[in-house]
Image (cartoon, rainbow, N blue to C red):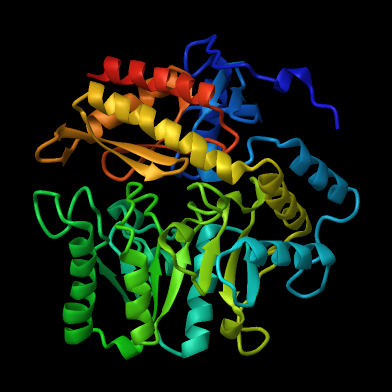
Length: 452
């Protein structure tokens, strides 16, 4: 399929004030007709190609947000587009929850083949990450009959009432929505930069892991939450909205061991970390664990709405009708997912994520050497963040400079996203090249300099 020349962007090109006049007009309409949500930047996108987004005023941005880690194969990948267009000519929807079609079966097979675990797996398709976690909750309860869960401080698992009960990254998410699903206990996540058990932020990795697990076992389980009542731990391999927190490498293995000792399931939320984002197909692979339940969404179908829960076959619903939906595994999403996985393999995008991610992290470390306001550079693969502080010794977060850098990056033509209390995250498409990383570093450098 021939691609239009206008999609072949060469670099950043800002030709109007930001936002431009047409963008302002549409933003005004948005405020008139849409319920208030979580808009971060006044970008009104018109079209995109690979790592670039063009707005309605003709400005071209380097997109290091990937639509919040969704367009991992780049915007409007020609092969994914072709697969969706071919399906559009055949059939759009026929409720794969009640009937059958081959595309859904093939998509499920492709997903089970790339997710970690040598056991037989089954897939339940959804439409979003929150919906995947809602389904995971019901799968866990349906399997072991237990009603309580343990999640982690800093976690983000969605904003629907069930998933919201697991979320603990920002108070605003829960303000005014009590009660959510009862039976969820939150425990500290092992944050190597800001140790949750001390003010100095320093802890040996093994000791930090042990402290978290001791807290769960010797305090939570021993005093008020009987482990035999816990259905599952719900955990992100790397915390996303909580600040791109990479735990000690031994944490997940030890958490899985603790769970196994009490016959507790582990739901691994790979919604943001999956599909090559961290330089492996799934972030849990870095930690040497094989989750029996993985919740997925975002990049699973390159922007066609889709989510999934992948489970060990033993965790299958006991009878028909326990859970369902209308659009899960939609025909367009199924073919997009299959083609996305195929593209990732053919173009070696997981390997590119590891290689270019390592280069990008090195360049961010150079900025840390240059600016004392950067307290930490963290992440794996192309899931990276810089954390702004008022003082490197105290590690006190500095959200004000983070917010200024975020806006200045936008005015320099770079799209990024805040995360946590004071971090700025960079999650470009996995197709990104080193010269485009250099382009981003230049924009970040100038943004920081202007923000001081």
